[in-house]
Image 1 (cartoon, helix red, strand yellow):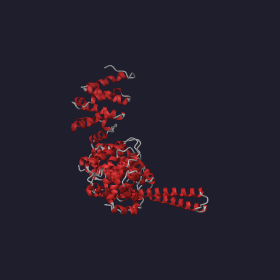
Image 2 (tube, rainbow, N blue to C red; image 1 turned 60 degrees about the horizontal axis):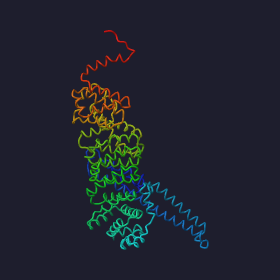
Image 3 (cartoon, helix red, strand yellow; image 1 turned 60 degrees about the vertical axis):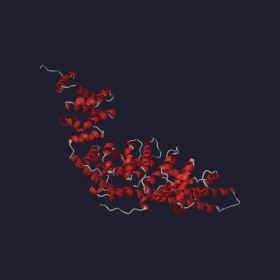
Image 4 (tube, rainbow, N blue to C red; image 1 turned 30 degrees about the vertical axis):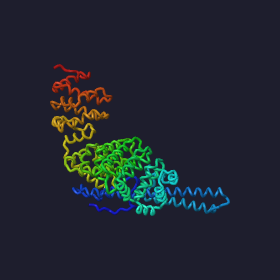
Length: 582
């Protein structure tokens, strides 16, 4: 077993390519915490690894959020400097400082700003690395005139006194106020969220609240305790804001909900949890969602909690992730975040057992074959490893391994090994997967191979399809499990647009009818005959040909007679051949 190394905020800077996503090295550290064999399925160890990932991720976000706030303060400083220049040249009688002094001071500040920027780049902490944080930076710079709200009697004098003092306090003073007046903090923020309708002000309130929670995750208990004292749900005001039209307000609210749900001692209630998971799922599906990275980030946080995972599965979450990954405009960053979600889900045994049914293996194998980012490859390999380690039934493990073999994962492992990774964790994953898949190949029968291919939905002209012996020995086995393989073939004829898949599926139905005496009746009952006949006029000549042959097999009963007819018809079709007299 590898020993877990210590980790600091400075490490999180170096690891974080994007503060809105989990840092890549935390995945490496998870791999170091993992032990081989049976112990790898131990729940407490898995949870410890994921919780450590959450701690590190939070540290990385704190670094970037602090940088964003610092940048906002610098922007305000630049505004003051502009005013200073303006005063100097608009009031010639009042020289604040000499031109040389002013220039040297300005140049010194520019140099310092450049130095700070280089330091941040060197440490890996990038300011405003997502659209939400970019806009949050702008929101922080636009201070609210709280006095106008109290004068207009839109907020109480008590709330004004607290928010004015809190908004203008430094970090240390804010911490002291939260310790001494936690209930007042919660009361004021809940009041402001319900009483103020202006989008710009609500953006500012939510950003301020998010910053408070980001700085210390234990502060979520202030909100939870206040709601409990008032005998109200802490979720109601936030869930209400998810219906707003302003996209920044909606996504900043979602970010706060995820933090409260994940960092609180008490888990989210089932009804609110189901609503929020369904909302996140819909955000992933939303066409042209510019905040999809934030939605994926919230989902990453939620799925670290074991009790939240099944609810996401129940709202058809896995299918949604798969559909997004299949999209043509998904960048590597979203790929990484969504596959990270699948990785979290794969820690739950009952979810890992069903992953071959959700087409996860084919989708991830395609991404693995195309991606060039090491962190995407690493998270895919880690997910594959869980899919082979977590299920308890040997038959399911074998089924998953066969599916990976069918999707050409072995070939991808070979190519990845040739890249000579320095990271020992990814090398360890490659060795583990290679070993398991090679074992499956040795035990793989021709029917196992065929079953895996049909279940993957990726039919091709592999040797079994044209093998007379295979169909003679295995045609009857297509009746197993209530004709499940035949139903899959018919479903492929219904849904696929790929000429190759349609050709092979039509061919296989014909071969089944040819070698199983009652095959014609079975195919008709499953609707296969009608599906094949509709492809007689398909635009692709190969599909038309296989459909025609399959229909002939469905229509003819005496196969020996058909064989003699095909032989006797062949010379007539070729004018270059001359029949000899008998």
